[in-house]
Structure formats: C-alpha cells, structure tokens
Amino acid sequence: MCRVTFPCLTRAMSRSSSTSRVMWAVSLWMTSATKPIRSAASVRETLSATVRDVADAYRDELAPAVARVWDDEVRVLERDLLRWLDHISPDPNGWEPWRFEFAFGLPDDRERDPRSVSQPARVGGRFLLRGSVDLVERHPPTGRLRVTDHKTGKDRSTRDQVINGGTVLQPVLYAEALENVLDQPVQSGRLFFCTSAGGYSSHEIPIVDRTRALGIEALTIVDRAIELGRLMAAPARDVCTWCDFRPVCGPSEFKRTRRKHPALLEDLQELRSRP
Image (tube, rainbow, N blue to C red; front, top):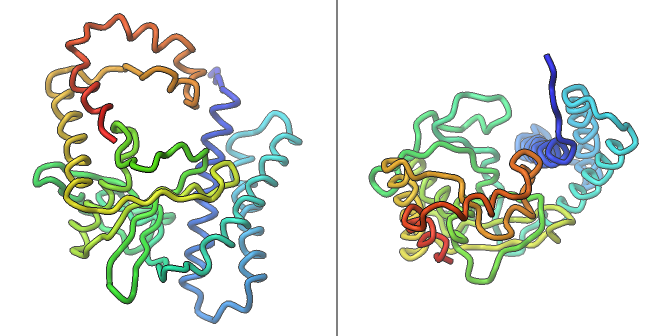
C-alpha cells in the first residue's frame, strides 16, 4: 500500500493533538493526586516527562523523516507547555479546573474525563450535539462554570467576536451543551491560546441571550443547508492561507467556488456576517 503524507499537515495535526494529550495527562495528575503535590518543580518535572512519553508515542506512529526537525518541535512543545503552567496557576479570578476532556455523547475513551456522559446534549430544543470540552472550570463562590477551548495557533480573535461568522462555535455551543447535560449554569466560554504562537492570550464570551441566539442560528443555517443539499465547499477570501489542509485542496479553491450561483450561498453569506 502506498501512503502519501503532507509534512506541514502532519506537523500541525501532531502538534495540536500532542499538546492536548500532555495538558490532559498533567491536569488529571494534578487533580487526582492522592498525596499533596510537593512543589511547582514536581509539576514541571511531571510535565516534561509526559512530553517525552507522548513524543515517543507519536514518533512511532508518524515515523518522522528528519529526526533533528522532530526533536526541535518536541523542545518547542515542552517550552510552550511549561509556560502554560505559569499562566494557569493560580487564576486571579478564582476559577478552578473541574473537568478535563469532558465528553458528551461519545464512546468511552481512557483519555477523556472519567465523569463524561454517554448521552448527547440537546440544544435549542432540537439539535443533538456530541463533543468533548478541553477544560471546564468552576467558580466556587458562585457555583458557575466556564468552558475553555484550547487553541495552539495564533490569536486572530476580535474584541466583539462571538461565533466569527460560524467559524468559532465551541465557546457558545459547548456552554449550552454543558448546561443541558449537567444542569448547571455556565457563565462564559473562552478561547485560550495556550502556546507562544498565540501569546497565551484568551478571548472570553459571556453566555447571554444574544450569544446563545447566534450559536443556535449557526446550527439552524447548517441544518437547512444539509436539508436542501447546499452544504458545499465555499471558502471565504484568504482563509486558505491559514488552513492546514491547503496541501490537500490546493491553492485555487476560492477561485473555483466563486463560479457557484450566488443564490446557493445566501445562507452562508448571512452567517458570515455574524460577529
């Protein structure tokens, strides 16, 4: 069997998934330790050891062609995650980690939170969602929750961003999903750019009537597109520049899809106008 690989795609996928695996393992260790954690240094040692274990597993799976390039990537990953530790402990606003990789409606997996639930979440009264939340935090004084979605790329969010034209749905829809399956109020959802590429910045979205409505509107438009057979590839201008899948699609997808009849894309254009 012949296998074709795209180096930039493989690198992007492995970096994102390996970051998530290390964060999950270290976070679970910190919250489930049967004995008090000795020091911050012990946490950093555990993180570094976890990076090595995950890197070894991915090395076997991906068989990198150039060992030096792979080792450089692993060192960058470890550096970024050590800085991530500095940014999460302690939280100045009193948020505490509560659930890691909390799944709803997905099969059991040892790398998901053991308190995950098997049933999907129902949002908007009719949409069934399945997914896994990177991090759920709890605010003990109020009992409210916060959804965090980790991003390993650059922070391109804007001040008023909620769903960003339908391209960023996790903070709002995951918040609605958690309220459904846990029956607890979610105060906000946020994007946390957890590497040096994103500057360890965060973008927080309050969960209020307006933001809820935008999330449900996005689902409604996608649902209608499926029903009418109009869920087609139609990338916006310049977005392919940042896409990891460009080696698969090629550089001319935007030009090709511009030839489609405008009436077929009216719903999509309406969605893209949403903040």
